[in-house]
Image (cartoon, rainbow, N blue to C red; front, side, top):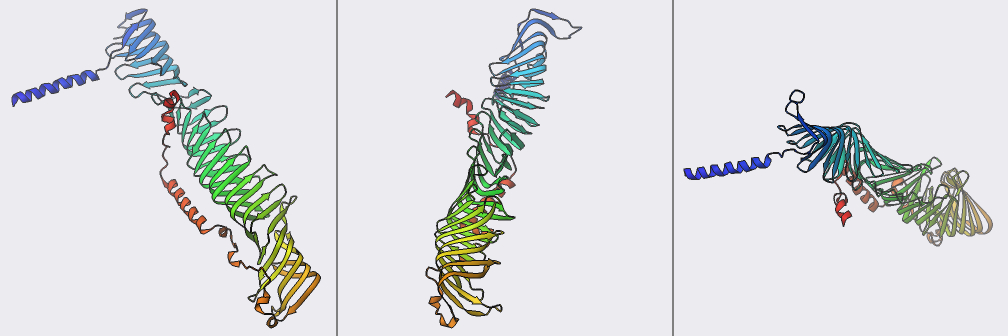
Length: 542
């Protein structure tokens, strides 16, 4: 038993000795010095080295004009034209430096300059920890990396990762942009920047704000994730997630997307959007809605897809698939919409229906025409199979006007004066001032004029009357009280801005809004480093 214990003790002693040897720091080696001297009075326990001094420590070469070498402490102080070189990864120049061989740490000051293969750092004082391969400074510094110039009060450089990290105010300037942040990681090999906290990117074309984002300064590509927006002179695009390509001036946004047009006083919302600045165009889908402010009112247009193209003065709005729109005194539906600011013409294409007050208007072709001078809604044109229907105010019948074409005029945004031309037919419930039914007017003529007042038919005037009779209610059978082709669609009427959306639209919106709120409620942490950043040098070599 004693022999066994003795054997174990010996083994532990040997292992401890080997571990101690492994941890023993390597000594600084003096490779060259023109002169060497020892002066215990002026520099106790140090060797004075002068002239072409060159020392080596574990792969790091230091050169200078003069040095104090403390052999016992394995420490050196260097003066004049100091340079510390670590392979081909780092060069550190200064007027004065200190190097601790035991701690493997360097300190350089006096016009300190650090060079790496991709960048140069100029500051007053630089510290270099060889154990962690980190360079850090706490005085105003300027980093030059190709076209990028970075300025900050402090920073850290990770040699192996080729990454600069700034936790105080930093500014990156290049010919195209100025980036400002209080927390930024910058990879000098790839030019990738990771922004965290309130950050801005300013250029001649736009202004970007984000609190979490990625920007590739070489390729001018970006991805922003938190409270982000891109502001142009005339447009502002917001979204939970923004992708941006400065080369094409293209931006796309996902979830809670909002594009504001300050010149044309409009807003487009949805949950996915694209904006091409050079082409003056935008595309929005996923519960898309365009809101335009006209005549102290708002017009809401919804379709599965919305497109806005063209510069100011020649802008075209297109809406596709199951389009619905709402204005305080007017609403409608159709398959698609085409609206031009240049011609002030809005076409309702494919099965159009318009509700003006209590009246339902249908036809094969329907155009809303604006006044280009006043920018107000001016007139309405309905071609082929025109039909105007409204419910009798007190009874169950319908007031109906049918004809080939309709031409209407708006007054203060409301349909006021309408002409029905060619093959005009009317069935109208006539009431006196006491709202008692006088009779049912059934008439055929070549032209009819209708005046609306307070959203209801006020007067009807017949021109070139062919045939007309006022029937007592009991003398006109129920089937004869409807014109051929009458389809009452009152249950489809869009009564508010919320009615323009389907249940499917609202379900999608609720889901995505909920996701957005959940994401925003999470603690904001720096963006995960991309594989393209980590593997940049590998990809480059390949």
